[in-house]
Length: 561
Image 1: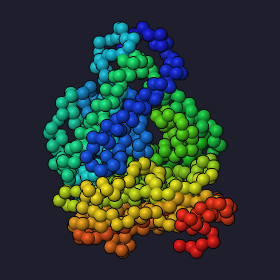
Image 2 (image 1 turned 180 degrees about the vertical axis):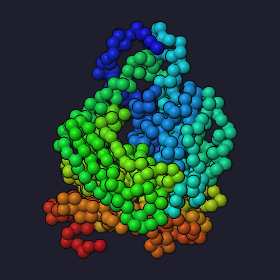
Image 3 (image 1 turned 90 degrees about the vertical axis):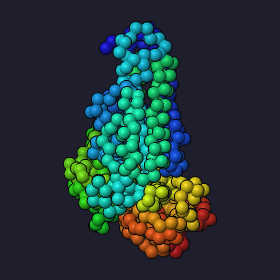
Image 4 (image 1 turned 120 degrees about the vertical axis):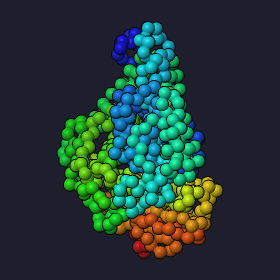
């Protein structure tokens, strides 16, 4: 199809730098507005308070154009969702819903909506355009949100002991929730009949639909402002720009193959350590990441789909390159990721995977960072807490489901201390405010505080972990999916390790991965790991030591805690 325009900017294939920069920021604002629409429209605290959701804009070929600054593990894996939908002949007016980790998803609680965008033939400077352009799909709006329950064997759909995906919840391959602009009530009814607290789920699904609709409205406005062809050429140009910038950053790193390994602390079925091994090869402007030698597919639920492994790798590459590079498909093009089929990082159905998205992704981040320390030591921090500390509490009658990832210590950097009590690695959520938590759920927060002395000592100190203690005021089921309870976050360059995490129910330690029924009045305490230190502790200056003592942080003259 040939497009003709009469604007000066559309007379050739170039876009002037000023227009490109304006357009790039506007495209990113589309993704951000999608996110705000989703957060404001959601009912569940998990989305409206913790903001466990992500939004992005894709072109017609399934390439990410712009993203909101949301959840790394969501965003890096989103292209797989669009690729999956492209196999189902999407049409204008459709909206697909999916969560199947083997067909574009990550884990079942992360429900994704993909909407073809066809804003019609509008735009300044448009004169003669093929009449079919009004129905042409120019891109896709994508929203992904962690729903507090999607069915399965336990409330909250995060069971520690699942051994097959069927136990983890309702599994949705790409399915039309909206077809030709009409909501399919049969599909919605099927979904809501298989999950707990359907009223809350219905509202959250509606918020995702509104977010995707916002993208189409805003993109139509950009067509009106800049002209259709200018905006579509802008898609290509912003991707090319990011790819060139990333390639320049990679080219500045020394060529070579850098290897590392790390361990997961069991999979919920066995407590045996699980090996993750990586070889990262930098060759000119490309990075190849190979996980051959890692553990095979697990019996438990720490298997991670290849899209999740890719997402973790993309995150690390972005962390060691210029953060000002616009995040889009161009950042991914120079990076290739491989894992053997039927392995921990590329499992086959019906593998259980709910913990892979939240815990294995964190360890992949750690191990790739460790490998790349050989190429860019000044850009790689000590290990952070390395876990999302997943806590799920819910009633089996479906009356409530509370889910939270709890922050911990950020690893010290080469030039500054690690941050205290923050999300680390593949998650970027907020906490649930105590006022909201106690209002929404039959829970009471007894303690929420930083853990003194939990950061590893060093020239620069690791961040402190947190302690959150909650009393459950009704009979409920508690699920914990956590890590770094046995192997501490490592310090680097002589820095000391961060403190281990710990889980307790009624004051008694429980395993890192556990699901248990509790009676009303039970207390659940999660003590999160601290970050590792960076550099020799005796190199820390006197002023910093005084600040540490005032803040209750351990110094080299203090007794070890």
